[in-house]
Image (cartoon, rainbow, N blue to C red; front, side, top):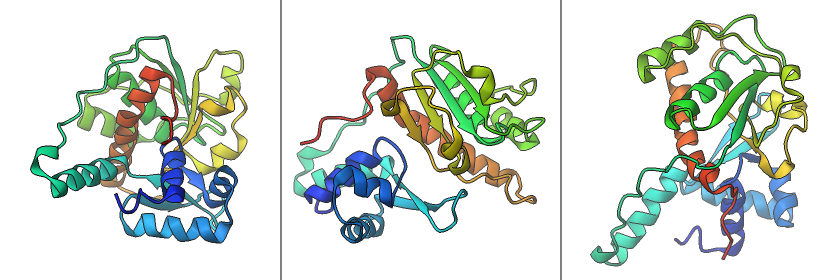
Length: 244
């Protein structure tokens, strides 16, 4: 509560609740000097509420990500510290979106991250959300560990799926475009309104040629956590809650 209670830090948390963002993007959004924004981001990182990932597009840059599970744990702990009666009850399972929603996941090769996201969102919504994935420079085929992880860890079979190029979707109706790759973020076409573009800065586990199954499993777990947090957004159609 001490960390989130500062007006600028609250604003930074609110912006990061929508999408992973770079420092210069946060500076523009909050209208504050870069050195001040960087200082408060460091405090949020030290408190475990925010993490940073080095950009795969520009190694000098980083994207910041809000750890929503850690925020929930910290909020619950603050309530208990004040009084035992303030123990927060577990949130009910996120409801499936009731309105028709179409979500596109994009990464460069469409061989690991975006097909994982497509399959995991379809699983969590029991097919009620129209979900598809594509790549800016698609690979000839899925990475073998992609299909294996989804099958072994989540019971999903995408062995017959092939990577798709973004150009095949230019005439398709979309509600959300979610990039999972820093490189794809820079080249993704404006297929949806800017307010419904989201970025998840997730390193490509295939980038290190010798990366094994556990790395791909951790990537899938990260994506599944983000999708769990995405469900309430899809259900309400709002990217951001009202700020206090």
